[in-house]
Length: 382
Image (cartoon, rainbow, N blue to C red; front, top):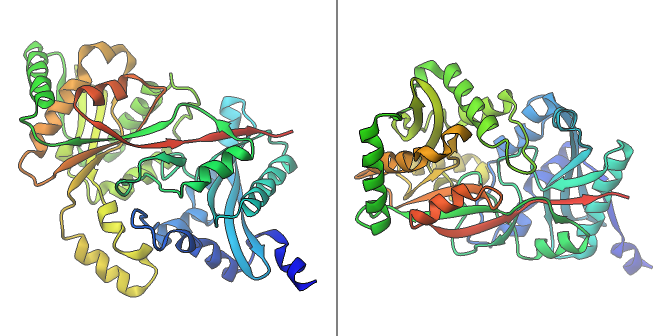
């Protein structure tokens, strides 16, 4: 009788402070011995999950669940409704995220069942994710690429998650999301070719490149919002950016960004392209244990003094009417010129999409290597 009772899996909502802490700390059970894992920063994650502080809760609702076998936690999941996006796009999606689970398929499917039940209670028709209450930070299931840690805003999952998701009936929601790595040897043939092409474009004088103007912050946020929503509107599953979410994300990097490496392309004073590079702080965050303990803050202060070996570029945006003017080539070459001699060894380009062939094509021409692939899933509910 005892053995049977202990085999029962219950998925219960997070209610108490102790359960919330179990939810937040559960990833350490999965990844603590994984050398590629970058722990999430607990203060940031706790704020994101807090209905009083999290930006997501200004436009939607969410609930958090833990799977238990007796007193042992087996996994976590979040079910969420983004009312603003669903209304804007005529969808009935239930987002799932913060999915972590021991290697127990029954536990994983119990978590998905609970998220599906939450969705049905709200007349939502699909499960879509994983997204951790954020469409840009650490989303998707890692499908390939386990030779190095993820870059900033990219995730990491165990190999067995893919099987859990697909055997439950999830299907790929869109093209895979891709991360590329490119070396900074400017004598390489690919960089030399880019430099020659860029020089021809400069002589035409049509496109100018400048760094960010942080003293005109609101204006720059508006420029980026316009570029994001217009330059990516052609993608399947395009989700329009909300200004509050964008400003929150950008503000978190404002203090560490070099404005000379946040590039804008302009034509007659109008921003037509954006190409931002920031230090890959995951090289730091991997060493500070998610800031679980007070002494981890001392580690953070120490490692922040050391320059990371890589930069990360999260987006290359060009307005559609300028796609054929070589703006991307010009931005890549300008970035290479500006980072030369700064001690960086390579650049991460992440994440782009299989559905956006122009960007992977540009990365390929630059000699970049695909090093990670992530997948987002959707499952229709009965």
